[in-house]
Length: 226
Image (cartoon, rainbow, N blue to C red; front, side, top):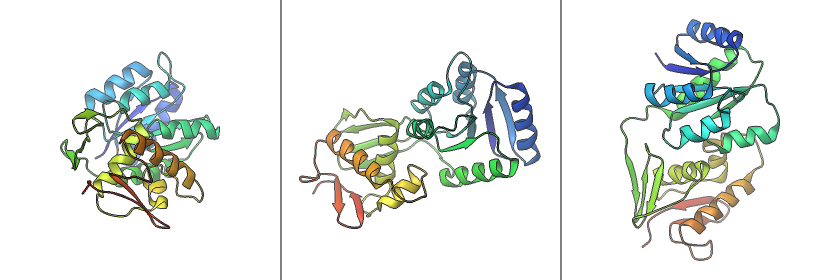
């Protein structure tokens, strides 16, 4: 039975979500403000957090940012804010999906199941090592030749996805779908920009790659230097 933590300040919405999720077989706990929600997410280690953005005491964006610094728990943002810039901001901060209120119980259930399928069972904390590059998956930290890398949440997710498939060419479309959760057309430039930032932090360039190798017309591959 998946454990869902609902962080929502509106008592009517919170009650409706508990009823909807319980009816569909989830175990549900709730918190009504940012600080208590963040504390519960870290302490109780739920399978998924359903997070409102307009929270008292600590805004939902800050909850998400702080949570991502210490946890890889799956997060679906559920809010009435429907501005595209805010959606992008939430996804860039580490949200796995974004639901705009109002939404039906069937849609919520489908989104939760999809996110949990993508995440699978995270299992025990593990490290990914590719040459001198090491990623602590649970701690969401990375080092290169023993030196810490200053990565944004999205950069870490991108690097992790590539490291998990080291030696394999990954297409930009796959990266948009799996890292950004954007299954629609367009957006290749977003991938290019983030890859450029990663290269700079890895001390390389597209012209002189060490770890990130572009395969023309196909995608990108992460592999250890020869």
